[in-house]
Amino acid sequence: MIFLVWNCQGAASKAFRRIRKQFLCIHKPSFVCLLEPKVSGQQANEICFSLGFDDWMRVEAIGFSGGIWILWKSSIHIEVLDTHPQFISLQVQDADSESWLLSVVYGSPNKALRKRLFSELSGQFFMPHGPWLAVGDFNSVTCQDEVNNLETFSMSRCSDFNQWIFREGLIDLGFEGTKFTWMRGVNSTSFKGARLDRALSNIEWRSMFPNVSVLHLPMIQSDHSPLLVNTSETPQIPINRSFRFNMAWASHANFQPLVKSCWSTNRSLNSNKNEMAVALSSWNINTFGNIFHRKNRLLARLGGIQRSLSLGARSDLIRLERRLRKELDETLHQEEMVWFQRSREQWITSGDLNTRFYHLSTTIKGKQAKANAIKDMEGTIVTGEESIKNLFRDYFMNLFEADNVLPASPLPQGRFPSLNVRD
Image (tube, rainbow, N blue to C red; front, side, top):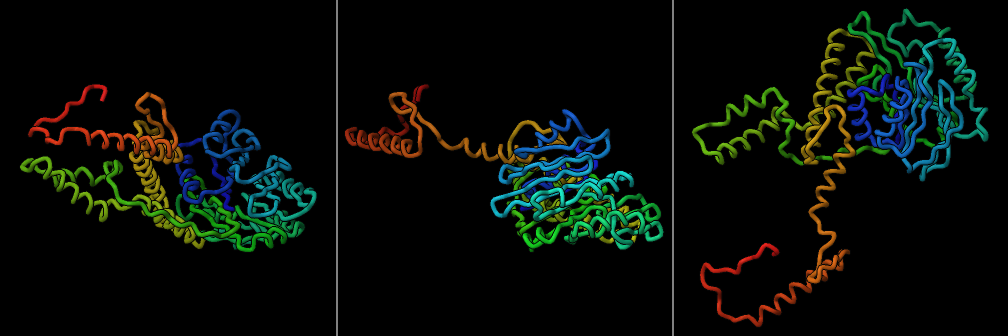
Protein backbone atom coordinates (compact mmCIF):
# COMPACT_ATOMS: atom_id res chain seq x y z
CA MET A 1 0.00 0.00 0.00
CA ILE A 2 1.20 3.49 -0.88
CA PHE A 3 -0.21 6.67 0.60
CA LEU A 4 0.71 10.35 0.56
CA VAL A 5 0.62 12.80 3.48
CA TRP A 6 1.25 16.44 2.64
CA ASN A 7 0.98 19.80 4.36
CA CYS A 8 0.09 21.53 1.09
CA GLN A 9 -0.63 24.97 2.62
CA GLY A 10 -3.50 25.66 0.27
CA ALA A 11 -5.41 23.36 -2.07
CA ALA A 12 -7.23 25.88 -4.27
CA SER A 13 -4.42 27.28 -6.42
CA LYS A 14 -3.74 26.16 -9.99
CA ALA A 15 -0.07 25.59 -9.14
CA PHE A 16 -1.02 23.17 -6.35
CA ARG A 17 -3.42 21.25 -8.59
CA ARG A 18 -0.73 20.84 -11.21
CA ILE A 19 1.96 19.37 -8.93
CA ARG A 20 -0.61 17.36 -6.94
CA LYS A 21 -1.67 15.59 -10.14
CA GLN A 22 1.96 14.85 -10.91
CA PHE A 23 2.48 13.23 -7.49
CA LEU A 24 -0.68 11.14 -7.92
CA CYS A 25 0.27 10.12 -11.47
CA ILE A 26 3.82 9.12 -10.55
CA HIS A 27 3.24 7.35 -7.22
CA LYS A 28 -0.42 6.18 -7.55
CA PRO A 29 -1.29 6.23 -3.81
CA SER A 30 -4.27 4.31 -2.47
CA PHE A 31 -5.22 7.26 -0.30
CA VAL A 32 -4.06 10.82 0.24
CA CYS A 33 -3.99 12.98 3.37
CA LEU A 34 -3.85 16.75 2.80
CA LEU A 35 -3.06 19.05 5.72
CA GLU A 36 -3.70 22.79 6.03
CA PRO A 37 -5.67 23.04 2.75
CA LYS A 38 -6.90 26.54 3.71
CA VAL A 39 -10.23 25.81 2.02
CA SER A 40 -13.56 24.97 3.61
CA GLY A 41 -17.25 24.59 2.88
CA GLN A 42 -18.63 23.97 -0.58
CA GLN A 43 -15.39 24.94 -2.30
CA ALA A 44 -13.57 22.22 -0.35
CA ASN A 45 -16.21 19.65 -1.37
CA GLU A 46 -15.83 20.60 -5.03
CA ILE A 47 -12.05 20.22 -4.86
CA CYS A 48 -12.30 16.83 -3.12
CA PHE A 49 -14.77 15.65 -5.75
CA SER A 50 -12.38 16.70 -8.55
CA LEU A 51 -9.44 14.69 -7.19
CA GLY A 52 -10.76 11.41 -8.59
CA PHE A 53 -11.00 9.35 -5.38
CA ASP A 54 -14.02 7.24 -4.49
CA ASP A 55 -14.62 8.69 -1.04
CA TRP A 56 -13.31 11.33 1.32
CA MET A 57 -13.85 13.02 4.68
CA ARG A 58 -12.65 16.30 6.12
CA VAL A 59 -11.90 18.07 9.39
CA GLU A 60 -12.91 21.63 8.61
CA ALA A 61 -10.30 24.36 8.66
CA ILE A 62 -10.78 27.13 11.20
CA GLY A 63 -10.62 30.20 9.02
CA PHE A 64 -7.45 29.76 6.99
CA SER A 65 -5.72 27.67 9.66
CA GLY A 66 -5.62 23.90 9.98
CA GLY A 67 -7.88 21.46 8.24
CA ILE A 68 -7.32 17.77 7.37
CA TRP A 69 -8.59 15.98 4.27
CA ILE A 70 -8.56 12.20 3.77
CA LEU A 71 -9.32 10.81 0.30
CA TRP A 72 -9.24 7.11 -0.59
CA LYS A 73 -10.00 4.58 -3.30
CA SER A 74 -12.59 1.84 -3.07
CA SER A 75 -9.83 -0.80 -3.04
CA ILE A 76 -9.27 -0.12 0.65
CA HIS A 77 -11.71 0.13 3.54
CA ILE A 78 -11.48 3.12 5.88
CA GLU A 79 -13.56 3.66 9.00
CA VAL A 80 -13.38 6.95 10.90
CA LEU A 81 -12.83 6.33 14.61
CA ASP A 82 -12.19 9.82 15.97
CA THR A 83 -11.96 13.41 14.73
CA HIS A 84 -10.19 16.31 16.36
CA PRO A 85 -9.13 19.78 15.20
CA GLN A 86 -5.54 18.50 15.08
CA PHE A 87 -5.92 14.86 14.00
CA ILE A 88 -8.15 12.20 12.43
CA SER A 89 -7.95 8.58 13.60
CA LEU A 90 -8.97 5.85 11.15
CA GLN A 91 -9.12 2.11 10.83
CA VAL A 92 -7.53 1.03 7.55
CA GLN A 93 -7.71 -2.32 5.78
CA ASP A 94 -6.88 -3.52 2.28
CA ALA A 95 -6.83 -6.90 0.58
CA ASP A 96 -3.17 -7.56 1.46
CA SER A 97 -3.16 -6.92 5.21
CA GLU A 98 -5.17 -6.96 8.41
CA SER A 99 -6.77 -3.79 9.72
CA TRP A 100 -4.61 -1.23 11.49
CA LEU A 101 -5.00 2.20 13.09
CA LEU A 102 -3.91 5.43 11.43
CA SER A 103 -3.79 8.89 12.98
CA VAL A 104 -3.20 11.75 10.54
CA VAL A 105 -1.83 14.70 12.49
CA TYR A 106 -1.64 18.43 11.93
CA GLY A 107 -0.01 19.94 15.02
CA SER A 108 -0.95 23.53 15.67
CA PRO A 109 1.81 26.18 15.55
CA ASN A 110 0.41 27.40 18.86
CA LYS A 111 2.33 25.72 21.67
CA ALA A 112 -0.65 25.55 24.05
CA LEU A 113 -2.85 23.91 21.43
CA ARG A 114 -0.05 21.53 20.45
CA LYS A 115 0.33 20.51 24.10
CA ARG A 116 -3.37 19.61 24.04
CA LEU A 117 -2.75 17.45 20.96
CA PHE A 118 -0.11 15.37 22.74
CA SER A 119 -2.35 14.87 25.75
CA GLU A 120 -5.44 13.83 23.76
CA LEU A 121 -3.88 11.68 21.02
CA SER A 122 -3.25 8.35 22.69
CA GLY A 123 -3.38 4.74 21.61
CA GLN A 124 -5.19 3.77 24.82
CA PHE A 125 -8.41 5.27 23.43
CA PHE A 126 -8.49 2.75 20.59
CA MET A 127 -10.23 -0.48 21.50
CA PRO A 128 -8.86 -2.98 20.88
CA HIS A 129 -5.38 -1.56 20.86
CA GLY A 130 -3.45 -2.83 17.85
CA PRO A 131 -1.03 -1.77 15.10
CA TRP A 132 -0.92 2.05 15.12
CA LEU A 133 0.69 4.58 12.80
CA ALA A 134 0.74 8.33 13.49
CA VAL A 135 1.90 10.46 10.55
CA GLY A 136 1.76 14.10 9.52
CA ASP A 137 3.01 17.56 10.46
CA PHE A 138 3.63 17.55 14.20
CA ASN A 139 5.12 21.07 14.15
CA SER A 140 7.74 19.78 16.60
CA VAL A 141 11.22 18.30 16.52
CA THR A 142 12.85 15.79 18.85
CA CYS A 143 16.44 17.09 19.01
CA GLN A 144 18.74 19.87 17.80
CA ASP A 145 19.92 17.74 14.88
CA GLU A 146 16.50 18.26 13.30
CA VAL A 147 16.88 22.05 12.91
CA ASN A 148 19.41 24.07 10.93
CA ASN A 149 19.87 26.89 13.47
CA LEU A 150 21.22 25.46 16.70
CA GLU A 151 21.27 28.85 18.41
CA THR A 152 17.47 29.14 18.40
CA PHE A 153 16.89 25.51 19.45
CA SER A 154 15.29 24.99 22.86
CA MET A 155 14.96 21.54 24.40
CA SER A 156 11.97 22.67 26.46
CA ARG A 157 9.99 23.43 23.29
CA CYS A 158 10.16 19.76 22.20
CA SER A 159 9.77 18.17 25.64
CA ASP A 160 6.02 17.55 25.22
CA PHE A 161 6.61 15.83 21.88
CA ASN A 162 9.39 13.61 23.23
CA GLN A 163 7.36 12.68 26.30
CA TRP A 164 4.40 11.74 24.10
CA ILE A 165 6.57 9.51 21.89
CA PHE A 166 8.04 7.79 24.97
CA ARG A 167 4.66 7.42 26.68
CA GLU A 168 3.02 5.84 23.63
CA GLY A 169 6.02 3.62 22.83
CA LEU A 170 6.36 4.89 19.27
CA ILE A 171 9.17 4.26 16.79
CA ASP A 172 10.39 6.75 14.21
CA LEU A 173 10.17 5.03 10.80
CA GLY A 174 13.08 7.08 9.44
CA PHE A 175 13.14 8.59 5.97
CA GLU A 176 14.77 8.80 2.57
CA GLY A 177 15.48 12.18 0.97
CA THR A 178 16.16 15.57 2.45
CA LYS A 179 16.57 15.73 6.22
CA PHE A 180 14.40 18.81 6.66
CA THR A 181 10.72 18.55 5.72
CA TRP A 182 10.14 22.28 6.17
CA MET A 183 12.28 25.06 4.69
CA ARG A 184 11.76 28.79 4.45
CA GLY A 185 13.87 31.84 3.57
CA VAL A 186 15.02 33.82 0.56
CA ASN A 187 18.75 33.91 1.40
CA SER A 188 21.32 32.26 3.67
CA THR A 189 20.74 34.67 6.56
CA SER A 190 16.94 34.21 6.64
CA PHE A 191 16.96 30.48 5.81
CA LYS A 192 15.26 28.13 8.27
CA GLY A 193 14.85 24.38 8.09
CA ALA A 194 13.45 21.68 10.39
CA ARG A 195 12.07 18.16 10.34
CA LEU A 196 8.48 18.89 11.32
CA ASP A 197 6.80 16.06 9.37
CA ARG A 198 7.35 12.37 10.16
CA ALA A 199 5.83 8.92 10.56
CA LEU A 200 5.77 7.18 13.96
CA SER A 201 4.41 3.72 14.76
CA ASN A 202 4.14 1.29 17.62
CA ILE A 203 5.95 -2.04 17.61
CA GLU A 204 2.92 -3.97 16.37
CA TRP A 205 2.59 -1.81 13.26
CA ARG A 206 6.34 -1.92 12.58
CA SER A 207 6.29 -5.72 12.81
CA MET A 208 3.28 -5.86 10.53
CA PHE A 209 5.11 -3.89 7.80
CA PRO A 210 8.84 -4.70 8.15
CA ASN A 211 9.71 -3.31 4.70
CA VAL A 212 8.00 0.06 5.10
CA SER A 213 9.73 3.10 3.62
CA VAL A 214 9.09 6.83 4.10
CA LEU A 215 10.24 9.11 1.30
CA HIS A 216 10.50 12.90 1.63
CA LEU A 217 9.41 14.14 -1.79
CA PRO A 218 10.70 17.50 -3.08
CA MET A 219 9.03 20.64 -1.74
CA ILE A 220 7.01 22.20 -4.55
CA GLN A 221 4.25 24.82 -4.16
CA SER A 222 4.59 24.40 -0.40
CA ASP A 223 7.41 24.79 2.12
CA HIS A 224 6.66 21.27 3.43
CA SER A 225 7.81 18.00 1.88
CA PRO A 226 5.09 15.46 1.06
CA LEU A 227 5.61 12.16 2.89
CA LEU A 228 5.23 9.08 0.68
CA VAL A 229 4.69 5.98 2.83
CA ASN A 230 5.09 2.62 1.10
CA THR A 231 4.27 -0.35 3.30
CA SER A 232 5.59 -2.91 0.78
CA GLU A 233 8.48 -0.89 -0.69
CA THR A 234 7.52 -1.90 -4.23
CA PRO A 235 9.76 -0.16 -6.79
CA GLN A 236 7.98 2.15 -9.21
CA ILE A 237 8.94 1.37 -12.81
CA PRO A 238 8.83 4.42 -15.08
CA ILE A 239 7.08 4.06 -18.42
CA ASN A 240 9.16 4.80 -21.50
CA ARG A 241 7.15 6.61 -24.13
CA SER A 242 7.91 6.73 -27.83
CA PHE A 243 8.86 9.98 -29.57
CA ARG A 244 6.17 11.95 -31.36
CA PHE A 245 5.62 15.49 -32.56
CA ASN A 246 4.00 17.62 -29.88
CA MET A 247 2.67 21.14 -29.45
CA ALA A 248 4.94 21.75 -26.47
CA TRP A 249 7.80 22.49 -28.85
CA ALA A 250 6.22 25.84 -29.67
CA SER A 251 6.64 26.95 -26.04
CA HIS A 252 10.43 26.65 -26.26
CA ALA A 253 12.38 29.86 -26.90
CA ASN A 254 14.50 28.26 -29.64
CA PHE A 255 11.63 26.75 -31.62
CA GLN A 256 10.81 29.69 -33.90
CA PRO A 257 14.47 30.49 -34.71
CA LEU A 258 14.93 26.83 -35.67
CA VAL A 259 11.94 26.92 -38.02
CA LYS A 260 13.16 30.14 -39.67
CA SER A 261 16.64 28.75 -40.19
CA CYS A 262 15.43 25.45 -41.71
CA TRP A 263 12.56 26.70 -43.86
CA SER A 264 13.55 27.87 -47.35
CA THR A 265 11.35 29.62 -49.89
CA ASN A 266 13.47 28.06 -52.65
CA ARG A 267 12.32 24.55 -51.80
CA SER A 268 9.00 22.86 -52.36
CA LEU A 269 6.54 22.28 -49.52
CA ASN A 270 7.34 18.57 -49.30
CA SER A 271 11.09 19.24 -49.27
CA ASN A 272 10.67 21.79 -46.48
CA LYS A 273 8.53 19.36 -44.50
CA ASN A 274 11.17 16.63 -44.84
CA GLU A 275 13.98 18.98 -43.83
CA MET A 276 11.99 20.23 -40.84
CA ALA A 277 11.25 16.68 -39.71
CA VAL A 278 14.96 15.84 -39.69
CA ALA A 279 15.91 19.11 -37.98
CA LEU A 280 13.18 18.82 -35.33
CA SER A 281 14.08 15.22 -34.56
CA SER A 282 17.67 16.21 -33.85
CA TRP A 283 16.63 19.37 -32.01
CA ASN A 284 14.19 17.41 -29.83
CA ILE A 285 16.97 15.06 -28.71
CA ASN A 286 19.77 17.59 -28.28
CA THR A 287 17.91 20.71 -27.10
CA PHE A 288 14.28 20.20 -26.11
CA GLY A 289 14.68 16.72 -24.64
CA ASN A 290 12.15 14.28 -23.28
CA ILE A 291 9.61 16.13 -21.12
CA PHE A 292 8.98 13.17 -18.83
CA HIS A 293 12.69 12.55 -18.25
CA ARG A 294 13.31 16.27 -17.72
CA LYS A 295 10.55 16.39 -15.13
CA ASN A 296 12.08 13.47 -13.23
CA ARG A 297 15.54 15.06 -13.39
CA LEU A 298 14.19 18.35 -12.02
CA LEU A 299 12.45 16.56 -9.16
CA ALA A 300 15.68 14.69 -8.37
CA ARG A 301 17.76 17.88 -8.51
CA LEU A 302 15.32 19.69 -6.23
CA GLY A 303 15.53 16.84 -3.76
CA GLY A 304 19.34 16.93 -3.83
CA ILE A 305 19.50 20.71 -3.39
CA GLN A 306 17.07 20.60 -0.49
CA ARG A 307 19.16 17.90 1.16
CA SER A 308 22.21 20.16 0.78
CA LEU A 309 20.30 23.10 2.25
CA SER A 310 19.42 21.01 5.27
CA LEU A 311 23.17 20.66 5.94
CA GLY A 312 23.93 24.36 5.47
CA ALA A 313 22.17 27.33 3.88
CA ARG A 314 23.86 28.92 0.85
CA SER A 315 22.53 31.81 -1.17
CA ASP A 316 23.51 30.23 -4.49
CA LEU A 317 21.66 27.01 -3.65
CA ILE A 318 18.56 28.93 -2.59
CA ARG A 319 18.56 30.86 -5.87
CA LEU A 320 19.12 27.64 -7.84
CA GLU A 321 16.27 25.91 -6.04
CA ARG A 322 13.87 28.73 -6.92
CA ARG A 323 14.98 28.68 -10.55
CA LEU A 324 14.45 24.92 -10.75
CA ARG A 325 10.98 25.26 -9.24
CA LYS A 326 10.07 27.73 -12.01
CA GLU A 327 11.56 25.44 -14.67
CA LEU A 328 9.60 22.49 -13.28
CA ASP A 329 6.36 24.48 -13.48
CA GLU A 330 7.07 25.25 -17.17
CA THR A 331 7.85 21.58 -17.83
CA LEU A 332 4.58 20.49 -16.23
CA HIS A 333 2.72 22.92 -18.47
CA GLN A 334 4.45 21.44 -21.51
CA GLU A 335 3.42 17.97 -20.36
CA GLU A 336 -0.18 19.15 -20.23
CA MET A 337 0.06 20.12 -23.89
CA VAL A 338 1.48 16.69 -24.77
CA TRP A 339 -1.50 14.93 -23.18
CA PHE A 340 -3.88 17.41 -24.78
CA GLN A 341 -2.46 16.61 -28.21
CA ARG A 342 -2.64 12.87 -27.60
CA SER A 343 -6.27 13.09 -26.55
CA ARG A 344 -7.13 15.18 -29.66
CA GLU A 345 -9.68 17.18 -27.71
CA GLN A 346 -10.47 20.76 -28.67
CA TRP A 347 -10.21 22.41 -25.29
CA ILE A 348 -7.81 22.70 -22.37
CA THR A 349 -7.78 24.82 -19.24
CA SER A 350 -4.19 25.78 -18.43
CA GLY A 351 -3.20 24.80 -14.93
CA ASP A 352 -6.30 22.66 -14.41
CA LEU A 353 -5.49 19.54 -16.40
CA ASN A 354 -7.43 16.45 -15.44
CA THR A 355 -4.79 13.89 -16.38
CA ARG A 356 -7.23 11.05 -15.77
CA PHE A 357 -9.65 12.61 -18.29
CA TYR A 358 -6.98 12.89 -20.97
CA HIS A 359 -5.81 9.30 -20.46
CA LEU A 360 -9.42 8.17 -20.67
CA SER A 361 -10.10 10.36 -23.69
CA THR A 362 -7.11 8.92 -25.54
CA THR A 363 -8.37 5.41 -24.80
CA ILE A 364 -11.87 6.28 -25.99
CA LYS A 365 -10.51 7.65 -29.27
CA GLY A 366 -8.80 4.31 -29.89
CA LYS A 367 -11.95 2.36 -29.07
CA GLN A 368 -14.00 4.40 -31.53
CA ALA A 369 -12.12 2.73 -34.38
CA LYS A 370 -13.66 -0.64 -33.44
CA ALA A 371 -17.06 -1.89 -34.68
CA ASN A 372 -19.29 -2.69 -31.71
CA ALA A 373 -22.51 -3.08 -33.74
CA ILE A 374 -23.51 -3.40 -37.40
CA LYS A 375 -26.67 -3.69 -39.50
CA ASP A 376 -27.32 -6.81 -41.54
CA MET A 377 -28.98 -6.85 -44.99
CA GLU A 378 -32.42 -6.75 -43.37
CA GLY A 379 -31.63 -3.73 -41.21
CA THR A 380 -31.32 -5.66 -37.96
CA ILE A 381 -28.66 -4.44 -35.48
CA VAL A 382 -26.11 -7.18 -34.80
CA THR A 383 -23.91 -6.94 -31.68
CA GLY A 384 -21.34 -9.18 -30.07
CA GLU A 385 -17.91 -10.07 -31.42
CA GLU A 386 -18.83 -13.56 -32.65
CA SER A 387 -22.10 -12.41 -34.28
CA ILE A 388 -20.31 -9.60 -36.14
CA LYS A 389 -17.62 -12.03 -37.31
CA ASN A 390 -20.24 -14.48 -38.60
CA LEU A 391 -22.10 -11.68 -40.40
CA PHE A 392 -18.95 -10.56 -42.23
CA ARG A 393 -18.00 -14.15 -43.08
CA ASP A 394 -21.45 -15.00 -44.43
CA TYR A 395 -21.59 -11.79 -46.44
CA PHE A 396 -18.31 -12.40 -48.26
CA MET A 397 -19.04 -16.10 -48.75
CA ASN A 398 -22.30 -15.20 -50.47
CA LEU A 399 -20.55 -12.49 -52.44
CA PHE A 400 -17.88 -14.86 -53.77
CA GLU A 401 -20.48 -17.52 -54.57
CA ALA A 402 -22.47 -14.93 -56.55
CA ASP A 403 -19.34 -14.00 -58.50
CA ASN A 404 -19.17 -17.56 -59.87
CA VAL A 405 -22.36 -17.06 -61.94
CA LEU A 406 -21.20 -13.82 -63.52
CA PRO A 407 -19.92 -13.82 -67.10
CA ALA A 408 -16.25 -14.74 -67.24
CA SER A 409 -15.39 -11.90 -69.66
CA PRO A 410 -13.39 -9.15 -67.98
CA LEU A 411 -14.66 -5.61 -67.66
CA PRO A 412 -13.66 -3.24 -70.45
CA GLN A 413 -10.55 -1.22 -69.71
CA GLY A 414 -11.40 1.88 -67.73
CA ARG A 415 -15.01 0.90 -67.02
CA PHE A 416 -16.02 0.04 -63.46
CA PRO A 417 -19.31 -0.44 -61.63
CA SER A 418 -20.60 2.81 -60.14
CA LEU A 419 -21.69 3.24 -56.53
CA ASN A 420 -24.94 4.93 -55.64
CA VAL A 421 -25.44 7.22 -52.62
CA ARG A 422 -26.77 4.42 -50.44
CA ASP A 423 -23.68 2.28 -51.05
